[in-house]
Image (tube, rainbow, N blue to C red; front, side, top):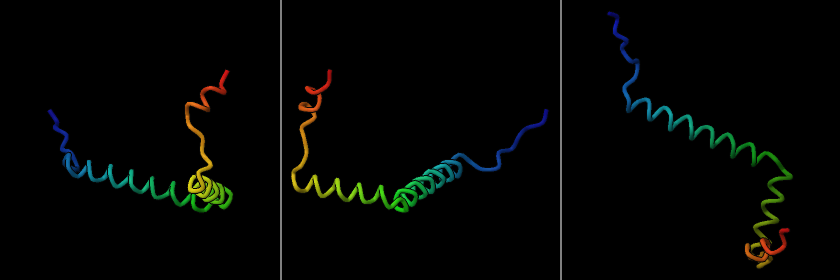
Amino acid sequence: MNEITPLFDEEVIKVLVQTRNLLEEILETLDIMADKELMEAIFKSENEIRQGKTRNFKEILKELP
């Protein structure tokens, strides 16, 4: 029988997967940062939070039908 020899051991595969996941996160972050409208909305929301312009989740639930 022919045995298949793995190219990488399990630990190397884990590191490669973690690296791929990290790179995906970085790309997603860069996409968000490149979206001017989205960044403005994020900054506006952060300012509203700092100013206390928030609502309790239970209040929002009461408004639902």
